[in-house]
Amino acid sequence: MKRIHGVLPGVFAAAALAAAIACPPTAQAQSKPMVNLTDPCPIKAENWRGRAFYEILFMFRQPDGGGIGNYFNSLGNALPEPNDAMDVRFRALDAETLRKDYGGDGVFFNGPRRLVANTVTGMSWEGCKQRVIAGIPLNLDGVFEVPSLEKFVSGSMPPYRPMVSKRTSSMIFNAGQTVYELITPEGAVYTMFSLSLKIDPKNTIEDLPTLGERLTLPTGWQFRSRKLDNEMVLTATADSNPPNTVVLDQLEGNYQYNAGASAKK
Image: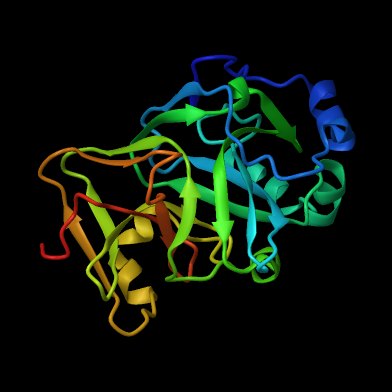
């Protein structure tokens, strides 16, 4: 996203990039979950549909076996290389190394990802201070909760199960855009805002019209696509009650609960 405070320069010096890869900032190691979101700063990613971004979650074990932690996201930050080269960098990251460098009980790599929404505005935290990992500039964007830490950090997000994602954002879909949605047996609508290349490296925005044919839905779930007559905005607030929830499909496409959508077309 375009950071209104502290925008990342578009070009990294080679020496600085090498240092970022070789010498992670161990001084920033965490001793406890950094779940309190402080020092908010406005962010904006305009005309980002189809563009790459990356997310790393640093998680901590809860007494009930669940996990809670912070996610660091590159969305909107200038990247030093093209998408395919950055995808290679992201896939080469090692969870145990990052856990030792930054603390926590587990690390999850969410992506590589491509945005499906057209524009995103919202809040980042810590004054938009960046954490650069392997040359990927990341910002603290929210808190994530999962029912099982062990299953989560083993590399598999539970598909078709609502999970809590505490962040402040507005995801804008332009009029005329086709949106892709999951509908729960209870009639709750979740709208896709990003897709993943983690399970299917060839997954693209252009493949979305056939997505419904590739998904195996649980009993009672539905998939649909619809063309928007008007602009649509998905909103979330970090301190909302009930909290914002997201759902993944088995390809780890990411859908947010859409309170303004009806299960009936």
